Length: 530
Image (cartoon, rainbow, N blue to C red; front, side, top):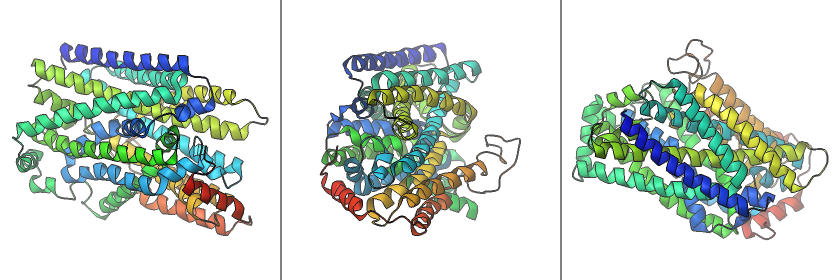
């Protein structure tokens, strides 16, 4: 890219960073240092504010960069990600949002501890939450690296490294000093910017084709080199039975994984009531639904206007399809309009990454402090010390995410998020549903459900083509691939539910009927909720 692209993008990005750091500074002066303030923002957000924040948290680099890139490269099959991400919110709305808000306080483990032995379930749930969060963070770091590679024309390897480190440092600052309140406002600002940028690009794509969607799709199919197959299922997932099972596995992970994501569950605690939590989800469904409809237009627009080959030359995984589309829509690389539009889109993508990593880091550091540290400490301390541990944990999690993000920088960000969703659906969703709806569920069942989904999911990923045995793997030079699918959900999700059932039926523990009744009343009515 030209010096003008780089300069203008950096200026816009710097402006967003300055605004968000100003929000963090303002909030840090007003906070009181309590656990409720740090983890839940004092529970003072309205449903609309929280709905925008949830949308900002959920519409990540995987959505803006990865999904659009997959549609540009694989057409119809890339739509699965957008459809899966959106449909998942129906599970959240009907099964999770209100009940979790009533039963918990700050984290997923709070829901489990309401009727189980506290220490083992907190350790299990905390471990799972941190693992899922780190996997999700890696995808955001990869998105940051892809943008930097595009801006620097693939000549600045050291600059990519330092930029990813800079993103990590900023997310630690947001979380450590601003907590949930600053993170929420950053996500609201980011959601508005992202929706505005996406609407502008969608309008420009439709104007380019005079509002004729058929012409857009036919042009995309023609330029793809695959003809009508580009608009039909099977281009990416229809080659053989292995690919078809991978398709099913990915769909299960996307639809069921959202309800187990720690940073999404923690957002329900930032509103004052369960009704507000449900209304927050309604707001977020509207915003997220509109966004994913527009990514379909942008994906096919990138295929029709930029072309899949140009997208692949820029980034093999397709992560730079949207910036390249903006460049072309604005008039090309040498035009002022192209420079401005490219810079705006790149800056919005950077803002997206910063806001999302802040939310994920906060959720994972809360799990470390509120669940793991609180369970392992030997004597009771003031809540303020737990918040201090959360701030330290944010630094450690940031370091791990940066390191893994640099390692996985050539993988598609939407694909990486699919792995995080699979782990969340395997480890967190079974124990959450069993705890809320199964009267006879026991502590052993809860622990087995978490580890029975978490361990197989991680092991299958390690033994899959994602890590070794294929040209696009993390370690292409070695081959210890024994599991043929790229996404483990089709195997690990049922194993999580099965392990929870086995743990319960083999347990000698007598289920506490009184605690279950109390939890049931509390989850459905909100009586006694924090």
